[in-house]
Image (cartoon, rainbow over all chains, first blue to last red; front, top):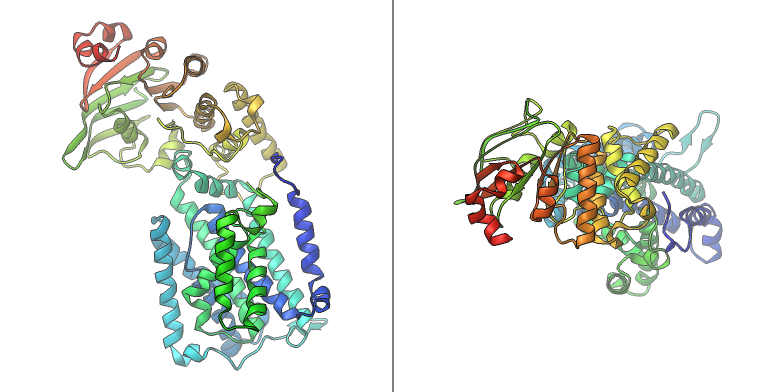
Length: 321
Length: 249
């Protein structure tokens, strides 16, 4: 479909720039005096924020409980390696399945709710999972988290890739997972199904009277969104070789929302920019003061006040419609 | 057999009886107007037909099937489409995109994650056809929210038409329009009715529009049927003149 002249930069050009920056990240991260793990963290949290934005920015529904699925992905991955099989790919698959199945059940219970009620109930369900991991010491490690395991090198049969010790190798592994997930989301958003989600976001009543069963599509969008959030959670646990209940805490859900809004929830890449700003601010400011969150908060308020479409919204008014 | 057969439907909101025992039979190919003073229950009646909410009592039969309790999207699939008194469109999308969505839904593609080139071409062609029919071709890539009211209304009607309905419900299609826009929309509705043989039920206030378009008219007052008949019969009905025409005209 034809784009509007307000696009100063075509969507494709911008995507190419993003990919070049991500692919060369380990090279220039060192040049600017930073470290690869920080880049890995940006990519992982960006995946979570973009997953949330599938629901928030492209279906028009705010979830404040995505940390639950992120955390289920993290615990699913950690527990698989610790208790079951020492395999990184399998850990991700189990983490993804855990988050997705939970989302399918909870989604079915909440798709009739709208607006603030939907958001509140997602928080409530998220906190349920938080308290389970917090209390169930024998299995989850409780407040201390789940340690005493580490990610396993990838065994490709003819060779193996040491993502355990080689930070760069792990970064590219995470980037590959990110590319697959983000690719599927972009693909879906351009499809007839994706357009029904945009229709629901734009005008739910009209969408309903065009013959779209709103609750079913909202459920699908929620499940897809949580699926990718749980992949991000699994990668997050693998990055840290550790997970704890804070991964499921509702404050973490709030961080995802902040990243999406900060970067621009109407643009596909917005949450990635938001996650980058968030992580870099956290890394930089927290080395000077413990109150780094107030700086992130101040930045967030300024962006929302002056650039309601987010940081990317300043550069490009419309990415995908 | 009537395409739409409404049997004695009522809708209560607490102690308020918005629609009280209304029956209506619409034959295939007919254009039926529903008129009545403000607060007569016309829009509530429309909401019952289209499934916005269920009736408190009574039955709604569409094409021989009892649809009284069916959700909206099932009724749409069966061939019932509607527009709203206050235009319901996707204002931030272009005309082309507004039409693309119902065209895909009507083709049964709403859950498709991908689309072949052939299918995509068919969808595009159908959108172009609808834009031509609605006189919107030269505004194809404009945002609908930026268009004049008449074009927005035309877009909404074409979106309903994109669903390939057998029954089109139009809630005050000329509300808030100037003379020229009213004339254009009236001509569009007439074309859909005469050229395509579409069955239409419309609520309208503008008497010129009604007498120009309608085969039969039903008059509602205080939630109940006051009179029913051809435009001439209604124009000469003393009760209607007393309750409605006298005051309105």
